[in-house]
Length: 207
Image (cartoon, rainbow, N blue to C red; front, side, top):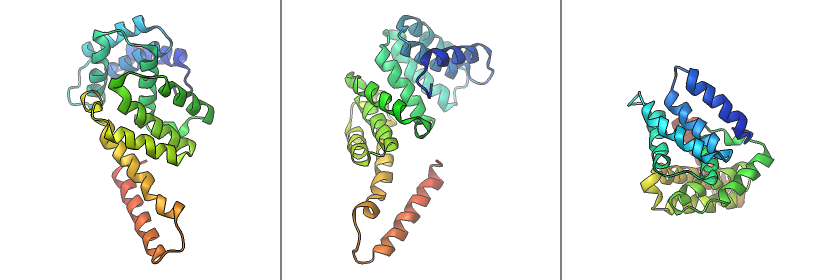
């Protein structure tokens, strides 16, 4: 999946769905996402319908997430674009985007831009912000995170988007004084405060 090779990812996740004892529910969701990303959206919908049936660990956040995300596509056929977006979402939540190659990050950016479904605009902007952050485009990343943080519609489908966008925005803006300013009064003191704040964030949310 990290290479955007959805056919191979589909084969691997399907095998895990059928053979793993860990979370068949989650692997079913990943199988459906990758199958839809290959263009087989009808086959993907059948697997999305399996996710609810395989939901066994009621207090497991990963399985709760899988069921919630799959619910939409149980009722309506997914599109390839939305399945690709869902695969990028998984990579973001896995903290795998920094490990992606520059060309693949650019392909992900293009794929996000191709999504025009208003119900996932907030998620789209969050992922674009994360991608541009990995590409080193801080200005673009800030703009996308700001858009994600302001999107109210995402609360209905992706409630985590706004708080995550605020967190990402805060991390980026914390580094701004060191990047954009110099030679001001008490500069060293502010640098110490910035580094202390970043260290505290890393303790709260391990990288």
